[in-house]
Image 1 (cartoon, rainbow, N blue to C red):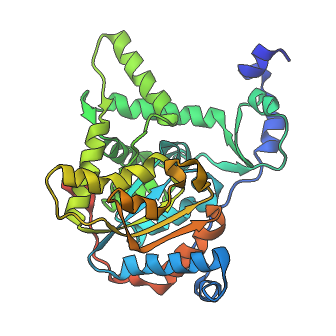
Image 2: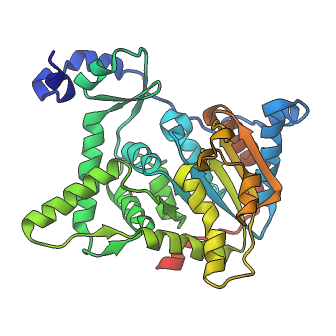
Image 3: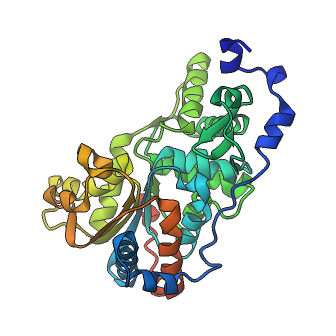
Length: 358
């Protein structure tokens, strides 16, 4: 096969039988309600190394849920949703264990909204030459496969939603709320984070929203509108920052549960500084903070900057913070299951922060 054919396969060039073989083992998302991690977390607290770090992080998360004044912000970067944690995040929303979400566009669109439309992620049973995967229109995330044709269907749905909206500026939160509304009416999966967040008034922010499958759909919406000689909706990243800062000001005491780092991490932390800039000099630093990451601290990048470092910027208090250096799919289910079964969420008041923007 020539380079051109390998890069841009046509319908006739895709080996459907081979593709079906590779996309035969669906990723099954873990159910934190189906097992009780409290005994293992308690045992890990008596160990050392990452085990003890995880146990302390879990205790801090439980403290967030027990603190009646604390609002919890879930921060998600990376591909844990594709890797099997999608239902875990959905359960956190359903069980009132988080009050706002900051995530990458890929987490929200390419993974959760994608499955909300009825598409799936697949375990890679083999890792063939990636040019072969391209010829089959299969995208790879480490050892997980996504059907590119299904992903392009998602792009078109995003464009369809954008086409239906009044042509004006929207925060990512406002647009993702429209995505949730779409899934309520047309979705094929009840346990979707986007859908449940819409139903429970939990706002979701994606500060780099177009760095995802949504970007392709929104570009199509804009180009199509240009060709029609009409107007189009746009995304307002400043509104994102302002709205999340409004939540921080309203919330007062806050805790961060951060999976990975990058833009979502910095965006959530920066709300403290932004509130100060707006004249709220009494705003609290984030009282609680957990970060689960495998990033190396030595390059000075945001993804790997420690929570102690964030204190120097006035973002995170250091009394109740914990770094956990571990691959998140291996430890997050234990933390979330422990918190679910300890049940502090049952006594929490729902914040419904999305209603701030009605």
